[in-house]
Image (cartoon, rainbow, N blue to C red; front, side, top):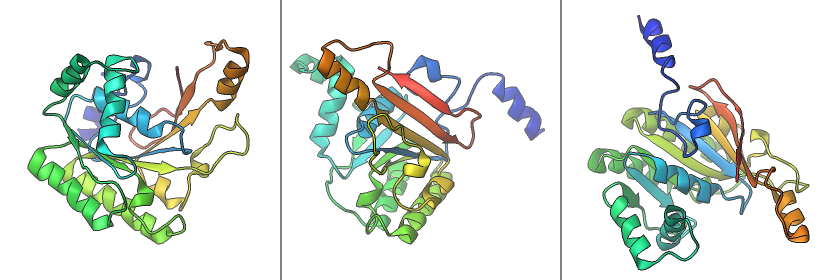
Length: 248
């Protein structure tokens, strides 16, 4: 009976919350009780893109950005909300009112102990009813890049908490710097232990098109047939699609 329900459900499309782009609606679903890795080089825009994803969700969200002050995270989202570089006071007020009771920020910059992150996730669920948690980033929660056992234990514990609370936990991580500008990384390029991606339900990689940026700077006119960024879906445990999403 459960198998029959599973396939009947699939007829209506992929389950879970959707990404902000309609072309991915039937390709990617952010489902309950999952852990997603969002990886990219420094400056690739992974936190920026993940902020846009969080704004699209019709549910309560908590962002714990240990690498960026809360005001900077929210300022970037305000720009995304209103669509231009210098939001007016009216734009800011509209953004604040729109997400007033749905958006929570853990206002702390710097390292944290793993147990503090676990407690934060549970508090967010049991006290605030939050269903999506962003942890930015793994390096602020473990002892270092070579702390493979610490990384494994941390991600393993997040998978347990995700199932306990039915939350979707988004974990930001870094990848090794590519040798060429046109190199598009894969999950094998993610720093640290390979167990990180083995344990995660989903793996997303954000890659800026640096080659296009240089060519645009030289020519002065962008080639808009070529994307500015790729979002690579490298793993989707409860989905059936993997591939690249072109973004401008």
